[in-house]
Image 1: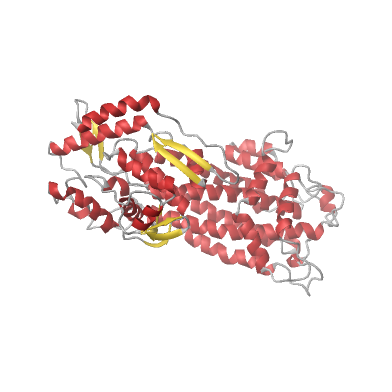
Image 2: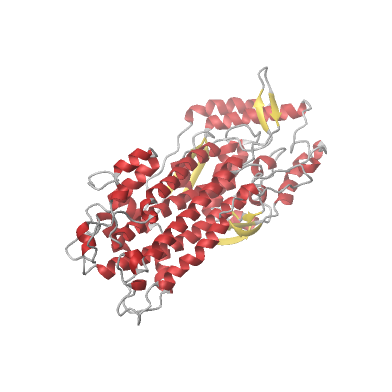
Length: 561
């Protein structure tokens, strides 16, 4: 009876449901207020959740009502005798083992304990928080049969700034079993590690310090909906796409520094040739290059004559001419990723699911909606393109070292007397060292399935391995791009006197000035590790990305992309 009354009471509150908004920012603070309904968590909001300094999330009242109805229907189906995985039946190879009614609540706690076996580094706080919000949103769809109070508990931790320590190694892409089980232990008050205000401690201590109730027992059927899904994978993928987009911007800035230093031909970026290829992302990539070099006097016949080129170059190397095609392909992949992530964020990624029956009541359906095959293979593809961008960046930085390839830049980009000074040859070697590692890490984990659990789970997407490799390659790409930025800026400085009276492109000038505010030009040889580390920090901070976006933004800017 109480469940029926709760349905009526919740329905009476539905008209009060709100919508999510980004609150006004305090000085230096990003605050986000969000309402979850299971159906409208879009890309922009996901990025806001990832990057917010303070986050308040609540459950939409219509979604709350739907969850109450589904919970009632789920319990009725169990009472009517349906055998249901994780509710009145055990898990994995033990799926045929029934659970006594008296054991079904205790079973939930033991599921979390047994599945929290992950190892390795913990997810960052912001990724772990996004994973919790994603899981709460999928539960809000009302197909998993959990209580709305369970979602309230998840969101209470998020709002209080309590983050479970979630190890990144153990999941096979067959649900986020290990990391989300670790989160479940914290949610229920078990002595698993959690973080709060920069300090890690057992959950009971952390929860009390945050002013939250320590104990929150799960009820029948609530452990599996928490751990059987793709929320951790999706959160890590959101983070990877954000990083990749900013590094793609950074490459654009580094590339135009290279173009100016080598006084490249502009014809390869002519809109007409890219319009003929009919790939929208490639068209936009070429437009970005044109916007950044807009107004250049270096990339002209006059600029090339300043360093002794008496005849037209005809065309530059493939690494120059094909860059819009390569970066355009990457941009298209990232655009596709946004759409796939949005669908995943608003989908019922669990097993089992409970649905209304046509004739009344509810029934459970067992299936494989936790499987992350699409995301896993897409992540592998993105990783391959990230590695290819690293290869391209390394090839471009290598061209800056040699007289013929750079069109007469000083050998090794040495400042001062060449020979006495060895210049930047060993800086470029850092990129050479990292690129083979990137190529090795780009091997698609999605083709390396291993069977597990006595053949009950005999095919696994290995998507968590895929996303870990992607992040590892993004780490390496930051340094590879820093090499290109540092060397191309040096190339510009070494010939600036000969180019007196000729302007750099408006965007190129902005990027070059930014680099020089952090790292001085190289004259006589000096200790170069700090220079490369500072430039890598500049890349990692997304400062170059922001400069590129500002230089190409639409508006009054005549050079906008």
